[in-house]
Length: 495
Image (cartoon, rainbow, N blue to C red; front, side, top):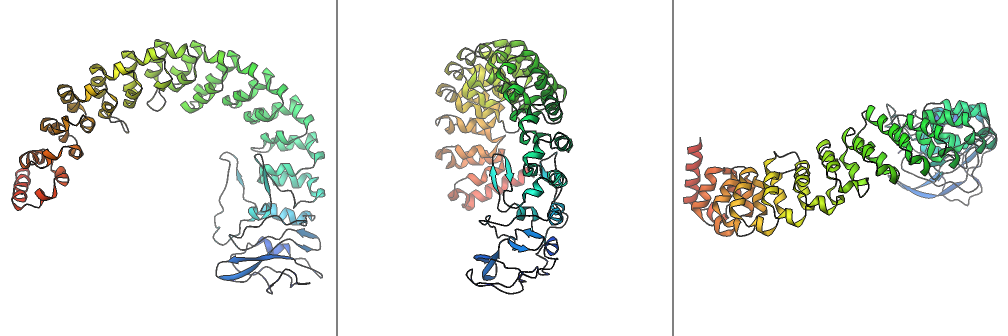
């Protein structure tokens, strides 16, 4: 490992140290060279306690040092060495040097909320993490509270530059800048920075002109504005027009206005948003909106989101027509949760037939009387299997009578072999049922009784249906020379 220092330092109590200078090692980021480019006739560099480094027994990790004209925190250059902010650390005071750091930051992808990766980072140190290595989180803001001098916090060019690269950087601005109308307009005009209105002065946050600018670009900014703004119908409509789900941040009074909710819902449907977005919109709606059948029907049918039913009023969750329309319109992933339906509807054969069509596992939430219904389980297995939904598995939730009825089990297993493994123990000893199951699924033999597995004639009969079940035959039988000859004869016959 190339040493990043001209001279080693051993102890923190030595009166003077050799000045640290950047090495030419490829693991050290190039921008650091510029930081110490100016002459430093007198430079004292305090060092922290030694820390372990790969391949080195101990290494003195550098902390902020002073350079005339460039008072900057000098953090660990070794990748993987993280340091806390030192007490009484020096601050940036030289604009050009701080601008150099800002320029080294990667661009922010505002649409995805992620940083664009550099094309070659194999030998680079993460400059941004070094700038903020001593920072702390306050809510959702990453605040650099020790490395920027007050005169730079009052510099418009610096604050705009760092905010453009790193949105939370706006919070470094002085109170004077946060109350500067022209400057705040410039910040709000930056791509993806409209949400920074929450960090501007109270005067700016209450000014309708600024609020409209912010909400027209970032509807979610409504969340951090005053109660008065969140109760202003015009402002809420602007936020909803930009992002329909921002309605959740409006006042309770406005969340209860059907007109605004329908506006948000229509926008989501027109934009082709997912069922998740519609479910979220309904989740935060007022009780009066959730009880409106016409509005909720629009969300379930036009929005194709049956999950809306889960959030509606108790009366709607007992409305057969409303619930059946929701099942018909929604996919299996976003169908209503049967556990939220009324007991009356969970005992309704028509409703539960639609429920098991969407998801066979809804049989679990049917009433006890329907779990004992031949009609419901036969209807369930009559529907073709879908990925993740094997219809025959629904029989595991049926009554003991259903799972022990041989005639019914024959009908069910003809349509779905997966039902076999859920039958009562007595039926697992029935060769006729096993044949039906093996014709579709060799794994069905896993659950058969020991009596059948030890019966050579039955096992040969099963192998004639599906040779894959040979792996489940008892070892003693498989190792028998006579049995091997018969199995080979079956193979030859199939060929």
